[in-house]
Structures are given as structure tokens and as C-alpha cells.
Length: 131
Image (tube, rainbow, N blue to C red; front, side):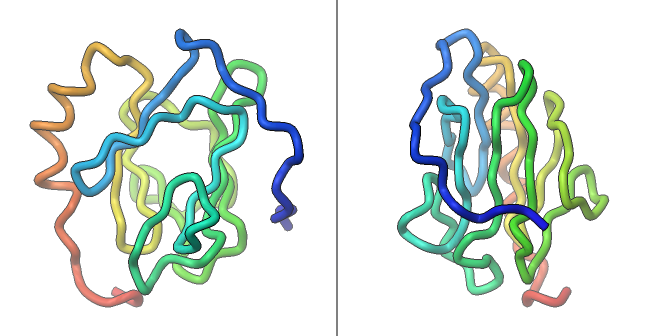
């Protein structure tokens, strides 16, 4: 079971260590060692969708890698269409938070190209929370 408490120390990454999450046409910069994702406005990345839990996920920077954790969300998380509880993210991973899809990017040079090519396919809602 994953601890849901927010770390008290905010630690920023060096710019060369940044990553990005592209969802619903928005580019979210991952520039800290802990990023929270969920429906609550208290999260770093807020996803306004009825299928998203208030505290849905956390991305941490550990030993030079970004690690995605499911915080016991109702809608779950899939990476590359496989359900996960914890996974080390890799460039180009397709992440699905309940019914909200995104793509994980570690190379700033390809953000614009990826946004234009991929977001049209990623943002299609496929139905309700259970589908």
C-alpha cells in the first residue's frame, strides 16, 4: 500500500532532468522530485474527470528515473495498456489514469512534434469510468 501523505520538503530537479506529461492537449512539466496527480485542486496536476480519484497517482524521481505510483485509485492506472501499481516510466510510455490518457516525454526537443502527432489519438474518451 502506498503512503498518500505529501512530502514536506519540495525538491526541484535540475532543468536537464525535467520530464513532461502531455494530456488533453496540455504539457505538464515534471520538475520536482514528487508530483501528485488527481481530481483535487491540491494536486500538482489536476484532472477534472469523474473517474479520477482525488489523490490518484504520484510521480517521483528516484535514482535518476521517474517512477509512477497508483495511490489506490478507484479508476486505476495503466501504462502501455497494462494495469500497474508501480512502474519506472520510459520515454514514450502511454499512461492512462482511469479514462484520461497521456504520454510521458523525457526529451524536450520532441515535445512539440509529439503534441501535434499524438494528442488527437490520446484524448478520445472511450466512455464511462468502467469501460
